Length: 390
Image 1 (cartoon, rainbow, N blue to C red):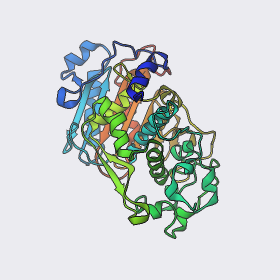
Image 2: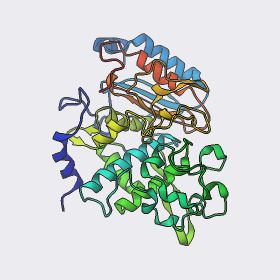
Image 3: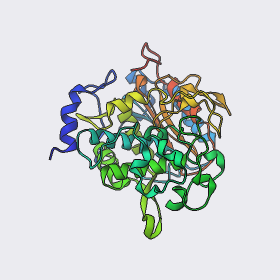
């Protein structure tokens, strides 16, 4: 049987790639083998000619002053770690939860599963346009007949109608609760017809992890480790499991914990067209599609009232934010992809700047996500490529 790694080696030549992602691009070894290359002094940073050491120093202080949580944050430019700030958390080894950042990870892993499936490498074939619930047997019988209309894509871009956070329902629970079988009307009935509104949904991404499991024949965590984490050198993680008793069993959800430096590897892979070395790890079509919204809705998201055009396949498009609740995309290049998470977690990349930023706290609550990314972008010395899409 042809292996997935062999297939993606063959496919590498034909995949879409952004400018600069060629054979000479740097990709770091795992942390145990040296990790990210690093510029330690203002002189070293200045010698590269593409980052402003003073603005990085100001960003360091801003990060320390932005709240009082323990955290680890990194900024990577052209493959160099140019800023690392730690307060209580280790950027290398601390695996406190990354909250909703895990949604972007799950969507990325599911794209890998879909790509594998198209080459006959999984028990079932998957497209993001497929009905999601044909891959979730434990949801039968459906608690709402409209669930049969939900596509995989809608699970990822918050247009499924599955228990939006605006309902106030707990995000965590047993699988019978998540499947709508516990008697809670908030999980049993969709909040709206699929595709007709935007309601940010953690429950929907828990469903996406089950889709991955039933397409690949492997638990979501095992598949993510084998096809994404290990190939790009991630070494520290944990996954959240939900229980379901004899009827539903124990299955990993999408939620996880991961250090800031390892989150940066995922964002760096995205920034380079999904490539890592000579391998196409993340499908190029997924990288390309995440550069735009994956739905046509213009109505505000139900809970935070964000511009619905902010949401793509699990990732978000911060440049599309228009000031709702203090969250503005002003000054952020249009090709930026990010995923914020409660507690000040962030994973983001800007391919046109070859820039990656991450932050991990393990906490909860709001934070100035876009300001971090905006300040990091402003620290890049301006040139003609700034703000252009790859």
